[in-house]
Amino acid sequence: MAVLTLDRWKLAIGSGQPLVVIAGLNVLEDLGLALEVGRHLRGVCAELGLPFVFKASFDKANRSSVFSYRGPGLEKGLDMLTAVKVALNAPICTDLHEIGQAEAVAAIADLVQIPAFLCRQTDLVVAAARATQAASGLLHVKKGQFLAPGDCRNILDKVKEAIGEDRTILCERGVSFGYNNLVVDMLAIGQMQDLGSPVTIDATHAVQLPGAVAGANGGSTGGRRSGVPVIARAAVAAGADGVFLEFHPDPDKALCDGPSALPLEAAAGLLKQLKALREVVG
Image 1 (cartoon, rainbow, N blue to C red):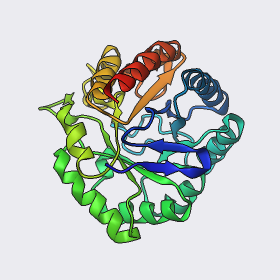
Image 2: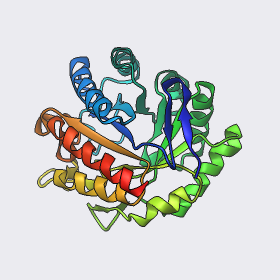
Image 3: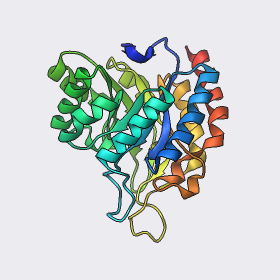
Image 4: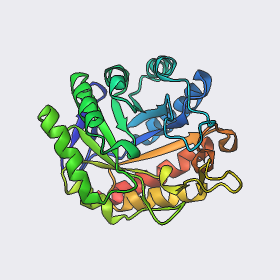
């Protein structure tokens, strides 16, 4: 399995490397909140000696309902992420949804993320790969809820064909299991690593219950917050190279995916456990 690096941050992910923590908010709400969450998580990771990447979305383009909060948008969102990057002196991860966003996002984000629903969109993957290579960043591609682990080979092939090298981290985030439910097959982590890519676990979105909020007529996604640590611990024990986690000071008041977010105060205890598991697994 390859080891990928962000040289400017002295960050490496892959076999034999420390557990990488990609963590922050589901979606940008305001700059003050982003800085509060980012500073807390950066401090926890620094104390534990874990590499930290701040994550937040500027747009949640795949919300269930047209009335759901999506975020500040591309221009304001990237301005906020730039401010967070400078204030925290930390790398940034954010997702894009359109080909035309690739260069602007890659100029700010050290990890450019392809959402799970869009991981098979060839033109988007190619555009993101080219922009990321030009900016010396990495791709973080979430495996679609509809894909088998081995199907991710096609994603990696598209990136290599487009830019001549592998700059891709794959992310497991569960697979659709009937209606309104997701499950995580821990064997998928090793299977995706066998394709030659480091693999992270998105323990936050893996506990979603898509469209399952009672009385919302499919317009709102539920979640099982208590399951996030379970999925995270199991995945790290299975060999995951990084964890993707979302936090909020008051998850019940979060503007997006609150039922799947962990309270900010839970970060230190969980990350301490995950570090210990990584050291055992090696």
